[in-house]
Image (cartoon, rainbow, N blue to C red; front, side):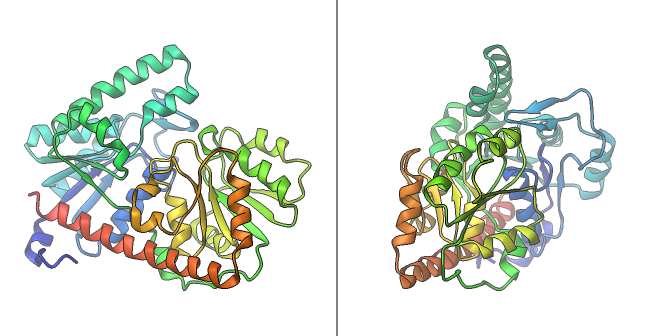
Length: 367
């Protein structure tokens, strides 16, 4: 806990988060699931209002860009009203610019409560990849309007990637904070396992979608037939990717895993790959680092903006660079890989601790 935060400040801070993402369904959903899990140890009066899994699916909904299995739905206002009445928040944090986020913003305006906006995802970039020009026009018109409204009327806009600073300033944000990212408690609690002595398995985990560049992993698998490449996740490209890899005996696809299963696969692997075209942060790479696993990440990923993490990442400079990075890992001595593993492990855990302190300070000094 930050030395400047006293127990009285912790007691009076009551925080309501509003998110349109399902818990643990994507990077944003996982971020706040992990964050609130860690914060509740210090801030017990904290709650998140978001869609519930398999509850109240609405026909009045639209698919998320790149992930039609996840939709923006109308909030259950009665559930939210009862929850807010019980919590009586004095800080509102808007996580997404969808219907839940708007409900939180309107509540903050009505009750004159401090409002903080988080800007995690550049949806405009995703709509360029997935939506046709007409859909993209209307979606971006809505996003620009709502994001401007949120950024102009919030005490702070929060980002986890310094490349987003110019975007939020253009949206009218005056004050911003660059925030760190929490780790899942499970990843922290399970003792670290030694790096495998031989590079026999490398993994990827995430949505099987166009922006993740998974084709590059399949192409690299052809260059390293003695290494098993595990691709974990679900998404719109799953069938196409399986078809492309059907002749490769060293590519294995796995469905979405719970965190216990995911930790086990990461621990059995010698590295994790994240060759994404667009990655605001890259939480799965950060999580693998917390397990002491080397990561190979594209330079476009936001995790590279954090020097204390970037110093221990193997960076993929171009789309044709993935095999070179894998080969560089193979060419390391055992002691060099062990050192990279330990440095990754320590850097990720230190970053987690600092991130939680950052959030506690933010939520207890803005009342």
